Image (cartoon, rainbow, N blue to C red; front, top):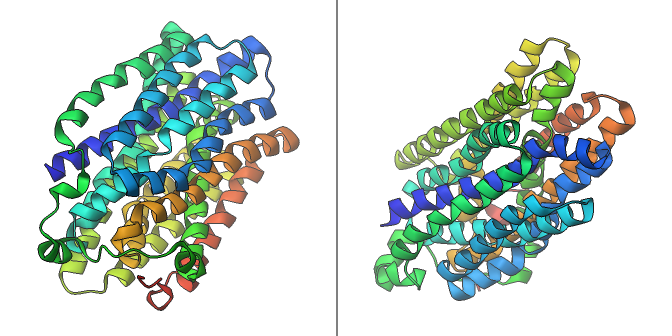
Length: 406
């Protein structure tokens, strides 16, 4: 059942991202109703990532200790019900509280999913497995932005939160049927597992933190996700406010960009696996795909130097699709360099960096727009971060710096 479970994990991530982007489509009518300015909107958009980020490492440790099934179940229930309850908020404080609960529930998703993949797929097929799983991070916005925008426009933001929060609970049925209580029980016997999944030895936290690899991964992941979270939270509003698009149009164009990234990401994971099977070094292959994705994504800054709607839309879509080259490979590269016994903890560290960007990007973008009166400065920030991410992978993420098992 390992491939069906990967598809299920991808669907779980789609649902998680529905509950991340639903506020993006609702924030404008909510702000008009309750009188919130841009800085307050940015605060609300970033709130989910405060708890999501804070609990990444604890969730990773929890998953390494108890497996993926029960922690994921509890987290899924928490974030879905909190998302539905957002329909009841009447003040900024209530909205922030609900988003904090959504973030807490979702903090288990990536550590649990990456642990499952690390323990069930070897190096030659892991890129495709990670790519399929990570399509959820892009199909979620691709489907969620237009769907949530439609529900808000047609029925109001309260109905949208109820529908998105409660309908997702159907996902729990196959999860309970397909995923074993002890995720390690599905592995081959120890000698076979060594060949199938690589080393399951653990690495101490001290050894991990002393390695330049983890700091390169942290920096690179932050830079990658800064761009992604800008696109999730503010790019639709950029289309609406800078280029006069309707709510439906902004959801459609944003969804198209994320759908393109999902397609490119899946193909990039499979392509990297194919190259590795032909005998090329996995670290160099996955680094090459990752760096190429960062460079293509930096073309987003062209939009800051043009008033053309067509140019802005083209580079918004092209840049996000280009980043798809990195999407499966920067995660798989971490798994290649870190022994499998500690992978959920390491994923927790990496995802903490990812979601620090989720806190900073929405707030900083809102503040810059409020201060400068335009989206030009936030877009230029994106290019600078992505180039810094290229340097981190070139200089720090190298085989000789990888942490050693205890």
